[in-house]
Image 1 (spheres, rainbow, N blue to C red):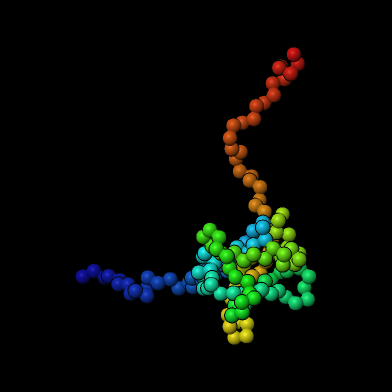
Image 2: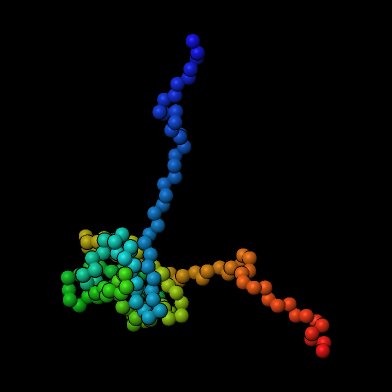
Length: 155
C-alpha cells in the first residue's frame, strides 16, 4: 500500500489578497475651438442622457475655472449637447475663455464624476492641462544622415 497525500480545493487557493484594480475616472477633452467633447464611452459610463438640458456652473469666487458642474434641468434656457462624430460636445467658447482657459493653444482634458446636487445626480468635470508627451529617446528611425566628407569641402 502506497502513502498518498491528497489535496483539497483550499490547498489550491492563494492566501495572498489580490489587489483590486482601481477603476479610473472617465475622461474627455476640450477642443481647440472651445467645445467640451464627450466621447461615447464617457456618456455611456456616466449614463448621461444626451436629450436633456444642463445648467453649467463653476466654483463661486474663483477667477480661473478648475471645475465645471453640469446639473440637469428641465428649463429651456439650459445648454444642450450637440452631436459630433461618434460623441457629443457642449459649446462653451466664451465661458471658457472668460474663465482663463486658453483652449486655442493648450490641450486640456477633464475627468468626470457624479455627485448629488439637491438630491439629483449631477456631473463634475475637473479640468487640467494635458501633459506633453516626453521626447522619443529610443533608436533613431529612418536613413542615417549623410556625413560631410572633408575631402569634398576643400576643393
